[in-house]
Length: 420
Image (cartoon, rainbow, N blue to C red; front, side, top):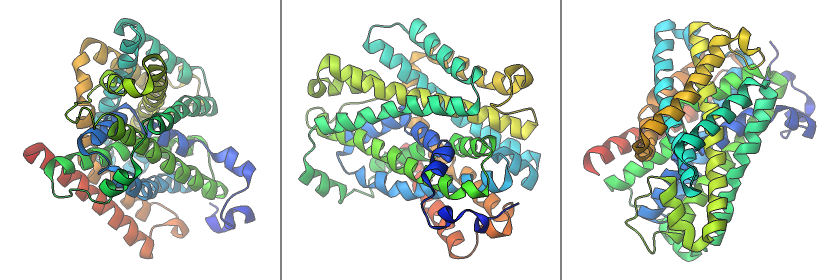
């Protein structure tokens, strides 16, 4: 198998050629757009309402953390040609593979509940009942995947996810006080249990099990090779910056527009966030802009989380798993995806109170981090070719980043649950 040293000269110089970037771009950007899902938006909004700009700095500190983690999935996918679950099964045995897939399933269920709650919330804003909005969303998600190849699914997912850029306009029109922003951002109350709980939620909103499974499987399904490695890393790096800027925009909008007038507001639903922002955006225009951002976030995340579970279970159990197969030739793969989509829509339709779980789901993701990151780093140490294996100073950097992230996520989540 070729190594990175055999990559074209354009890649060795740093920034790959434009043609290479366009050919490779996709998996990283898609997974990062999905990262800013409905639960993440609610978490960022709640952070801004409760703590103003004091949780803004973590959004930027999480950019390199997110890149380090997802870059490992790119490295593993390109240089082994295998998905995350398949590598765990080969390296550590089927028991550990099923254990990892179980964590993926739990995280995926939590994600789908938040995504469809966002869809239902957008429908509520425009008077569309859940029995109409949820089936429509499910039908669209099924059509996107069942009728397309990997490249088509990727392009549609990016187009849908780019609606999240609407949140930048929301933040701008909220007119944040820049002096206050700077002061609060640089003086966080790090030893406050409630603050730590939301730190954990924000960490869990950034690194999720289904992101790891999705990007590695997508890279393998797209058949990226060693010569694509540099471009794929740029794809991931740009995506990491964009997704955290979107999170920061939502937080700034909530801190500037909602906190000064309703600091005790509980933003557990899309409707509550939209209603709180309406005085600053205008009712009709504001609802449309906000709804586009939420729909983009929810739909792309539902695609990614569902495909991650379909790929992950296939890698562990051995059934056919690729978007390049016709649905009749990969029935289990498409069946798991369909079950995720339809099940998520039905769950939210019959139990609408589940939307209050948004922040809790992100904390659950934070509590799963030791398992997710432990497997990821260990795989990078033992399954990669020698030239790409983690070693030396970068290995220690990766371990340190993962350990600190897990520590903040787990301790903050536990502290907030018991002492917040």
